[in-house]
Length: 334
Image (tube, rainbow, N blue to C red; front, side, top):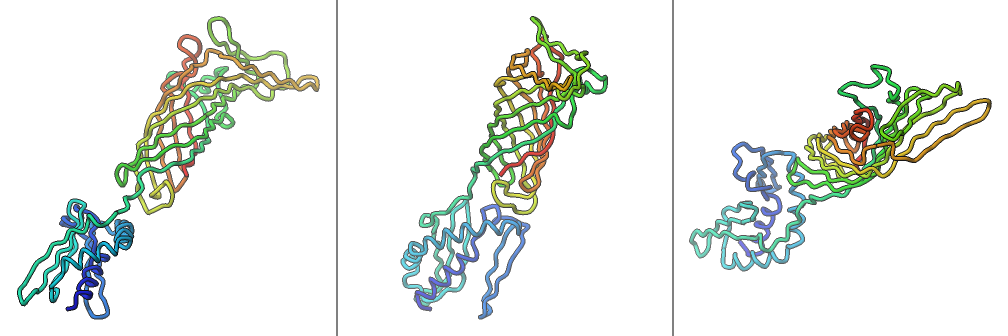
């Protein structure tokens, strides 16, 4: 067989038969794909998981980008070989070898060629930047119970008490199904009180909630607390392939977060005798300067359901009711 034909056969085998990894090559339970050419020649691909066949694409691209180097090495290594009996391509310890059994000067010969050093493989991208948008409903727990259960003056309306967050971060896929999200965001707690006549007052020692008795038409009463946050969340990805930062259709994660308060204000809106009255006061109100807690997400495509619970209280210790904010809703990573 002519030298160019031998090289073409070896290269054809290389392009089709690359094993995905050493673990796949040594796997005892494999799936196989058989490809038959018009001349009845057959090439067999062995993989441990048919879903992994998508990963062959990057290796084939690397081979195609380095054809000149591979041809040069094969031409030197196969110089003098008259015919080829068997060709195999192996991936051992992340190195590619071409094993050629053939005939040279009427004698059987076996040549093993390490082609890894001549191929610049493109490693899959493991770091992804993403944008985070979040919208959830707020409430808080007092010793494990919602204040609404006891009709407390500081009870809030779950619908209308919004938690809004905007930010971004980095997702690191340190193994194929597992990643870690590291994100920073700005968020706003909006606690809209169920009783619109609720008034929040700061005394010298604590925060006091009361009900206004002027008999006005009460429209709104709320407390808003903004934070800057940092979160770390390990994620497990599974299901069919997806595009973008979310590689798989489904994801499940749980992590922690911490934040620093940037301010806060209380707002009351009412109407009396056809006069619209709006009161807004920026103040400390003994709000806790820090927050920290735990968070869980379950995602489908680019949409995630989330639930978050502050282990810290909304107000500083011994300055207000022991209220642990809780929120749940939707967030988007893309």
